[in-house]
Image (cartoon, rainbow, N blue to C red):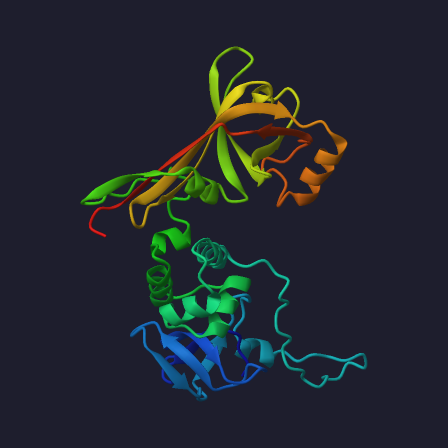
Length: 309
């Protein structure tokens, strides 16, 4: 019997063969995945040390067949005889992590919380949290509750609930407080890159607000676009650029507004540096080789917090 973190341990009834109890394997004691295991039981949410008996089998989440069924299928060598059984090869670490793991990792990085600290807060082993962030997994509700509590978010958010809905649908704070942010804090919140919104007057004279992937380089806000696009109209205009963050779990948030002239970057050395230092290509894809730079002459911001703190 061999398992990976995130697999399920199923205990069957000797009389009926039906599942009598199951739990998520959250801790391994041997690198080859052999027993014993730390198991978080689905019926009690408790983690116990388990050395499985003959009535137990492993349910691998990445495979349809339980381990017992796979081991029952003989492998044949070139001569047609049963080949010596070899231990299962652990799945490659190059596989994409599951959606839940990506959201956990992204929220942890956003809050600048280490993986070790997150595991401690959530009551998980560091190995299991590493597995969850790096591999497709199906954590139990108890695990998700612990992670949501550790990261100050919700289970629904970690599962991707409401991902297609606009943020800010939670209830307002009982005693909200609106703070004005100074220029230095605004610069810090703008940080180095992310997604912001540029407000421009389109070619037909109508206002437009378009989200763009941006960078902050030498105190200038820069983004890539395509000639002839709506955002390309920002060049040679005074524009407004806004970036914000909304925390639905805590009903808090902030926004920063930059206003200033925009221009097209044309100097070869500057273009080379922008392309070299860019953290990522525009999410919208396509050929977007025109760089627009905004030099803020005004930088203002606001933050919503609780007046009780």
